[in-house]
Image (tube, rainbow, N blue to C red; front, side):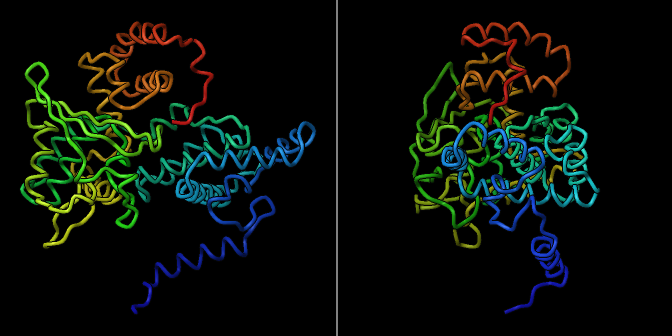
Length: 387
């Protein structure tokens, strides 16, 4: 058994020292998935006093039990890691406890800026999602939608990114074919990257992940080939799943052509493996979300394009592309699996990423969409919805 590298060992010692020696009365030593509930702030204490004066401890326990149950264990563990990073940052910068919740846009922006360069965009996004849920659990105002924070977080994948990716990949090679097909599928399908890749090789299940054995239907619509297949699980529908629909674009960025190429290059007889598995030295390897982002981010960086690229950047980019060329918002909404309200909120956020002229052109469509779906567009800015 090989010893751990000195740098990694040092890092582990520092983490252990922080948790065991530098523990704070507001932040007890608990499993990562419990930090969302058990790590507190002066704001949390005020909330506790309010709850004590209104409902019993039994009802309080039931509320927080159900709040925890609304997210998966792995999600809570990831979010708990984000709380630890945020706390370490605040301690290092001597941020007062009372300023940590609600966290101001300036503090959140500083936290994100400090992490850029040393962490992936997807990692930072997860940390902020954890902080947001922590604020929600403590009924604290979340100010992470501020334009500074949003601008630092994520940028959309564009055709420029995809052309750079195409130039760097050899789609006759198994791994590159899988990456190319996956990139175009999440982009044009407006799906979450986690719905089409696996978290780790050992996490794959047929109940949760789309497999090589999935039934892919093919139809011809207005002269263009359309592929559709079922997703066993999505973030918003859970086990009810959803549909991924890909329409041929007729150019070099065609998702249909890319998917067929992947299936032809990676001839795999075992159907009980992830859809974007590839052949690596005569063995089947699963394309994980982290490996996909690692490889593509390196390519974007070499082209000076890796500024805030996350897994969600593909979904954002695909939505922008379709909306900008005139695809009806209801179609984009259904394609990406949004509810009408979440999509309208999301659509309004996209305005921050595009020129003001296009934003103005979308304004009338947004109002019409809101009216059709019985949504008060004037109230949207006051809503805070988990997305």
